[in-house]
Amino acid sequence: MGLVVARKVDEVVELYVKPGTDPEELAAALSAGIAIRIHSVQGIRGEQPRAWLDIEAPEQIGVVRQELRQPGAEPASSRPVIRLRRNAADPAQGQ
Image (spheres, rainbow, N blue to C red):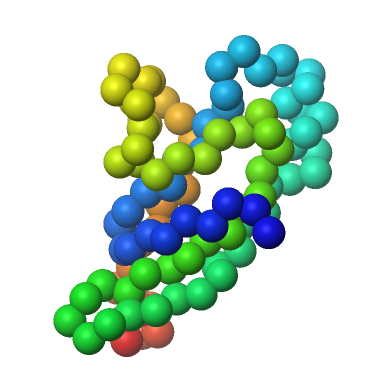
């Protein structure tokens, strides 16, 4: 199991390449891939459901909740981002 992060709808988990990472090392590490598994989903009446994500990534990849990003860090728009969004067209999402 990797890092487990709880997120509500529209909350963000950012994946980024750590500063100083050698591009060749990164390419080799990424060949194994990044695994993101939905660990569980729970909701309490009147609150948005939460999904627990289990994220396994090479050590050259940083994983951070958006609200914990350090001040002065590059903006999220310049980094690869995973977004969890509710799809209004999907009837299963409306439950």
